[in-house]
Amino acid sequence: MDSITKNLLAEIADIHEVPEGAYNLRANGKLQTRQTTANIDIVTKTDKPGIDIIIAPGTKHESVHIPVIISETGLTDLVYNDFFIGEDADVVIVAGCGIHNCGDQESGHDGIHTFHVGKNAKVKYIEKHYGEADGKGGNVMNPTTIVEMEEGSYLEMETTQIKGIDSTTRITKGNLADRATFIVREKIMTHADQYAATDFDVQLNGEDSSTNVVSRSVARGNSKQKFVAAISGNTKCKGHSECDAILMDNAVVTAIPELTAASVDAELVHEAAIGKIAGEQLIKLMTLGLTEEEAEEEIVNGFLK
Image (cartoon, rainbow, N blue to C red; front, top):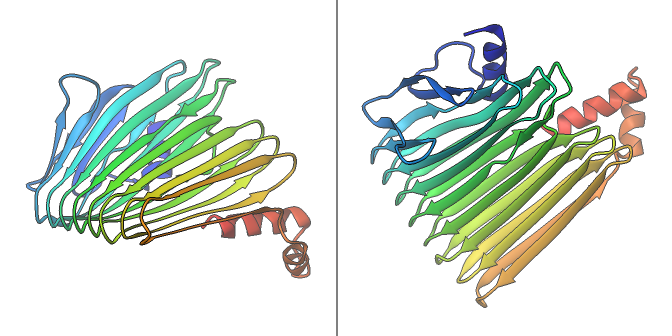
């Protein structure tokens, strides 16, 4: 691997050497390398770009890495990845995309990920997006995540985008059966003229299903962010969404909750807090010897941890 690929892999997947377990590395629209295990198979789709990740029932404490790297300017990569997680499995899936745009054209990645989570299966899904540029070309990412959860299943999703993406629209849809749980933790930072929109739509169709969607973001410069969280409680269930944002400079943040209760036993809650860094926080850190700029950075870094 060249130095650019190595750096991007470290940023998006914390990969510094060949990972253990199953993995699939895609670079500039093509498969670079792949490894499967006895319990995790990765198959190239024949009808459209992308892969099927098939995890056998009962698989425990295994992982699969599926990073995407783009280092060509003017390339927009589109993939359809389907995850089939067998009943009673317990796995970690690490995805993400890194773009190094060295030219004047726009480079981008659109990933459509569909999760079929089997009965009583447990999944932790980590997705990081990162961009860097030597030229004037923009970096664009538009991920779509579709989650179909069977009875008693659990999916925890961590998404992070804190550097280098000029435009993104992130769509997440969930359909939960009885006693299924869907947890989402989102972290976003924008600056300059960047734009980031996230759109969650979770359908709590199963009895005693639950979701907790939490977004933490920092908007700087002239950037704009939009957070939409739609939760529909169609039976006895619990749903919670939260947008917590720090606003700096001339940035704009919009939070739109949409709660729909179609059952008297649905418990749905939304919280939103958007504002500047508290003055007392800055003063406290500045009394310890930090400049105002250094104090702001410390607060932002701690907020997004």
